Amino acid sequence: MLTSERLSDILQRWFISEPPMFGVLCLHETKENRGMTCPLRCGQRRLEYNPELTGRMSDTELEECLRAEAVRILMGHPYRRRPDGCSQAASALGSNVTIGDNYDHRSFEIEKPGDFNLETSLPYEVYSREIEALLPPGPGEPGSKKDSMIPDTIGTDGAGLEKYTDLSELWDEDDLTWSEISGVISSTKDWGSIPGEFAETLVASTKSRINWRTALAGFRSSILCSRRKLTRMKPSRRSGFDQMGSVREFSTKVLVAVDVSGSISSESLSYFYGVVNSAFRYGVEALDVIEFDCGITKVCSLRKKLKTVEALGRGGTSFNEPIRYAHENGYDGLVILTDGYAPEPVIPQGFRCGILWVCENRESYATHEHWMKRSGRVCVMELQ
Image (cartoon, rainbow, N blue to C red; front, side, top):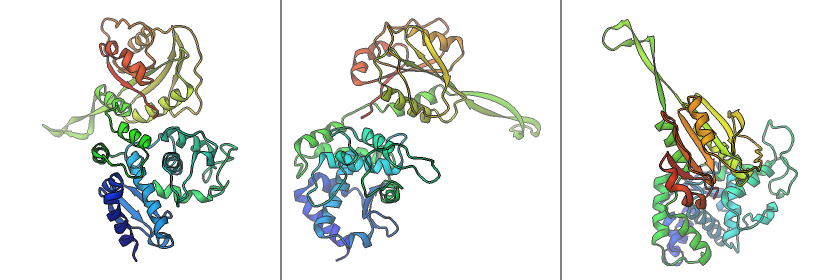
């Protein structure tokens, strides 16, 4: 029997036995792909299969493999949660480990946290970043990243990584598709083989949350500055090449201020720096970083993601310091990462710099949002 027919038979059975899995897979078009090295993969509203690899699988193995892809879709990995700073292979392995940690596959082997000597019950993004640090270097990279536990299926030379790279090839953020998947999850009453606790986690993932990376991109757009420049390369609209035309160059000076009073973890700081750097990649003339507590403790320019970050514990915090620094140095935008535990700042007269407050977690956001909104925008950074 052809793989497409076998998959169709599985879905027909799942209409009754696995409603949420049936629902999300029906959002995808099934297509054959003989060029990939994994048996099944999903993304971009497609479910692709390699008939040569799936043809060697028993009906039970194929069903379990399809079940893993359905769970992956329900968790949103192909559509909304691509971890920053991780390779395609690490993202796929992190996804597999998360699935293996939450759902029991009896006839299908999928990676689990213990295979990488990792703790259980960690978020997908954390698993992906931890696995990225364990993987052997790619072609042209000297040395090894870290002497750690790597499954034999991968090997120290990275020979087994191709199928994981293929597995996540189609993954990309897609808010529209995720909203449809969320609709399936929200309307589900019978969860089939999905455990109750895992089902509660899936339902919670569909609740409204602030996408702080989108907030950063929107903030950048709102403070984008333009300069008019005369040029003979572009003719004037009125008089052609007899007069110089003009173009506008867009640029933005952004200051990133990081509260290092001691309560913000190094992991949060590193993740924050990486996302800020990517969010402000275009149209930014300068992206400078200051660290502060009661005063300015460090000043530097951010040109690439920092590999290691140290947060030095000190005393109290004053938001007046970074605001004053931004005002005196002519910045267009100020992004402040903080837990919010400090007096509300006094905004100086003539202050024209846009402010984006990034709270480290939900608790700090709920506590300080009311006064932060008086001086700028507010969002929350979530590692999960």
